[in-house]
Amino acid sequence: MDATTFEPAMRRALELAARGPAQGVNPRVGCVILSPAGEIIAEGWHRGAGTAHAEVDALAQLPNGASRGATAVVTLEPCNHTGRTGPCSEALISAGVARVVFGTDDPGARSRGGADRLRAAGVELIGGVLHEEIEGFLADWLFAERHLRPFTTLKWAASLDGRTAAADGSSRWITGPVARERVHEQRAAADAILVGTGTVLADDPSLTARCADGALREHQPVPVVVGLREIPDEAALRRHPQSLIALRTRELGEALHELQQRGIRSLYVEGGPTLASALVAAGLVDEYAIFLAPTLIGGPRTATLDLGVGSIDEQRRLELRSVERLGDDLLITARPVGHADEPGT
Image 1 (cartoon, rainbow, N blue to C red):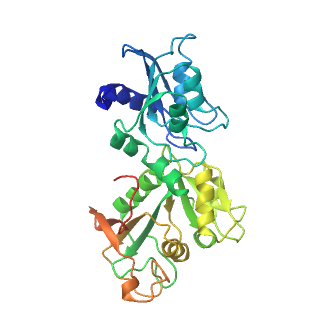
Image 2: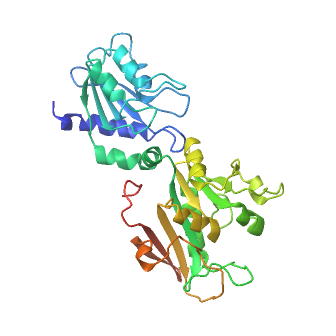
């Protein structure tokens, strides 16, 4: 049967998937069960960690035996993992489903393999239906699963000569109110916001996402601090609406992996030049959000330090994605040349 036959049902499954939570360890997945005649007889979606997966949720809507010979249309390859719930592949086999249509493969190290299990049980498999749309819908989760770390955006605000602060350390404000409002929009769009202990001790940031009037935005990024120094009990970020994650390590790859394991899919970095440079040097930055103000400051307070570039041949080339004017300032969005498999493409 032609895969395009199932596109309307897959679009409905994608609509159902969008009802699930956008953050967390598990992906947003939707499922539609079709009768042998092609009619929708059940629908389901995943409502968050610990709840029934989309396939099981849909099957639960049917009386015993009603799914025998049916087709399950699901946005993501059925899982093959036993965690808080059993594997969806086994549930579909037990239900007597004759065909499974899915949008994209499950890249999870523990959850993948459902298609192989279904095929071995004699279930017909059709993959790749609305593949590009579903890859875009699941982009942040897929990136985190494929790379075992969050998609990481590094932000800084600087003068045209690359300074992020004056010689005395003062930096409020280099950019204007329109640019600052965009920063808070970007914070609110991220699962978590990362700084180093040096920034906490020097600036005592709140790490919240705020509106222009100072009110908190609806979604708040989880505050994350990396480093070995102690965070004071009176630090502003301890009053953050989300619980603080303190990673006492200098190994950034391990730190980002731990965040991925905690369900952090997108990370916004606002640390100082030490943290920024370490992330760049380690190849852990997926996107740059650079705010430039039409001013000159001079002095030693640069946006980055040593990046491991010894000669011009080793420079880290970036691909410009956009240049946007925000009041008197510019926002330059760029990604490493050759970077692939990332959200927003």
